[in-house]
Length: 335
Ligand code: NAD
Ligand code: UFG
Picture 1 (cartoon, helix red, strand yellow):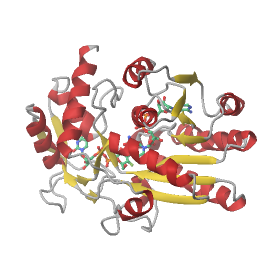
Picture 2 (tube, rainbow, N blue to C red):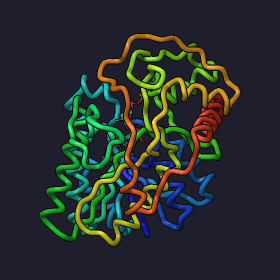
Picture 3 (tube, protein in one colour):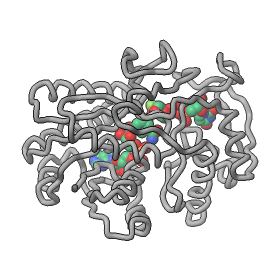
Picture 4 (spheres, helix red, strand yellow):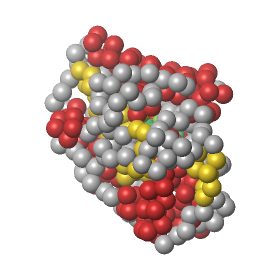
């Protein structure tokens, strides 16, 4: 089976390409490299031990996408391509809607023309807004507080409308919680440009001395130790969730949503402790005021994915931290 990965050179897409190749699928990447580096392809090929087909281009180029779908005889698409920085989306809403929403419309248009109607979409736990109850199941009310989150909500709704219009479409929205860590080879991983916005890449850069200390955004939340709690999931578990999704998709027409998380929340201090114990590194930190827009706690109900996809996350916090550290050491070596 040939699977098109839009945004496949990025963090989650590259790890999913490895999982797909190991399971006997052929991944084909379409990426414009706006948030990734072409060198990832060589590193991917080293892991997969086969050439990886990659087309450089934008998902908004509908005729190019259609050509790729036809020429590579694509059976299903996993749509990772998009912009994902919450803060930036507030400053640049047009860019976010153009890339994420318009990009998805272009992809769907090309898929309809090429008669490829199987799609897995990278959604986010951000579509649940400020949690009204925990753990968050797929029936939790949806809301958005920024342009990034709203772009994901718009896309989910668009896919639902499309599924209702034509029973040939099979579409799944995977709502990722907090993916962290890296492939065990240490050759690929999360590679944010500039100062990281997210906790784990920040901790990883403190560990290798690239940044002096972590700023913890608030220690007065109503949580186990006052710091924010999130559902961190190993990126390889997440990648394997896409294999389960593809297999479910082949038998289930229509539109569906699934949480991909571990079901367990960890605080910032617990993450620091896990990182220190699994790597031996020391993470200096200080408390600073809460970050605007942050919530206290967020973790997934995972029963639906377990029951319908026969998938659950297996890897530990220590594996997430150690693999992220290994990747950061390698990445730091060629800065
Ligand atoms: P990433 O930025 O590492 O990867 C996205 C890739 O898409 C990059 O390689 C980028 O160059 C490419 N891209 C962006 N716009 C494009 C376009 N118009 N045409 C072609 N390629 C384009 O991000 P990621 O962390 O791998 O996230 C993948 C998807 O998962 C995104 O849609 C993101 O919103 C979603 N998601 C990520 C997280 C997370 O914490 N990483 C959480 C929830 C959801
Ligand atoms: N945090 C710090 N210091 C930092 C960075 C983060 O204390 O330098 C804290 C945050 O306050 C929060 C926790 O670490 O309590 C996790 O923060 P992240 O920025 O790593 O993750 P978020 O849960 O805020 O958001 C991420 C993505 C969103 C996505 C969401 C759910 O950035 O796009 O996960 O998938 F929607």
